[in-house]
Image (cartoon, rainbow, N blue to C red; front, side, top):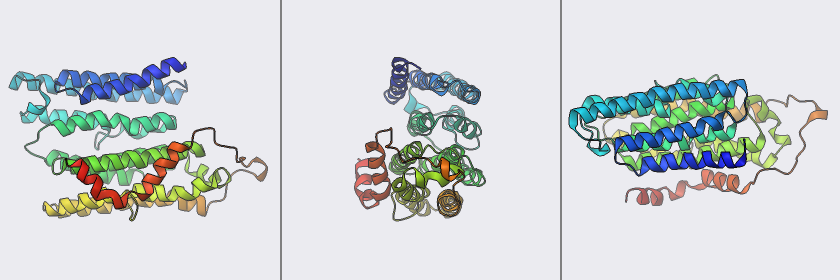
Length: 348
C-alpha cells in the first residue's frame, strides 16, 4: 500500500473518532463510527493474504449488523421521543438496543465471537489499532447514554470478564489471547460505567497503556505464537526480561500499574452492595492471570527454543524506534503510586 494512501486512511481513523467525540446528534455520531470502520478495512487487507481478507470480511459483516441495529435504535428513539440528541435518549427499548449495538461494536460478551477470529488473522500493528483506538468511539457513546436501569451494563460487564478469562485458557496464538484479554478488560470498564464513570476512564487509560506496550514489545520480538517466545532470549534479552512484568501488569497484579483500576473498581462494587459480582469478577480475572503467567513461564523459562543452533536469530539492531516502547513499558510498570493524582484529574 502506498504511503500516501496509508496516511489518508490513518487520518480518516482519527477523523471518525473525533467526529463522534464532538457530536451530540445521533446521526453524526453514527457517521463518525462508520468512517472509522471503513477506514480500517483497507488497512486490514494491505497484505492480501486469504486469512486477512477473511478477517476483513468478518469484521465488515459484524460491524454492519451493529451499525444497522444502532441506526434502527436511533430512528426508533427519534420516532418515540422526537429528538436526536444523544444525552436525551430516554425510552427503554431504543436505549437497550443502542447499548447492545455498541457492545457488538467493541466486542463485549456475548456479542464477542467476531473479535478473536478477526484479531487472529491481522498484523500486530493493525491488531493494536483494533484493540485500542477502535474502542474509543463506541465507549464514549455508551458513556453518554443515560440509563435508568444499569442491570444491562452490569450483566454485559460480568459476562465479558468471565468469557474473557475462560476463552484464553487453552489458546496458543498470542493475538487470540490478546483478543480475550481485551474482552475481559472491556468487562471491567463496562461493569463500573453506570456507577463511577471516572473509574471507567482510569481502567480505559490503563488498558490502552499496557496493551500498547505489550503489542509494541511483541512487534520488536516478532512473536505471534506462544512457542515463538521461547526464542526471544536470543533476540532482545532485556525486553524478554521485562515482558513478564508487562503481562503481570495486564493481569492486575500489585505493585504494578494494572492493579489500580481493578482494586478501585472492586472497592466501589462492594460499597454498592454488589459483593457477589465483585467476587465473581476477581475470580474470573484469576483465570486471565493464569494464561498471562503461562505465556512467559512455559516459554521463556521452561521451553527450549525450537530452532537449531545454526539458525538462531542474530541480535540485530531493532529496525523500529524503541523510544515509544521504552516509555510505554516504564509507565506500565511504575505508575501505581500516581493513581490518586491521576484519579483526581479524571474526576474534575
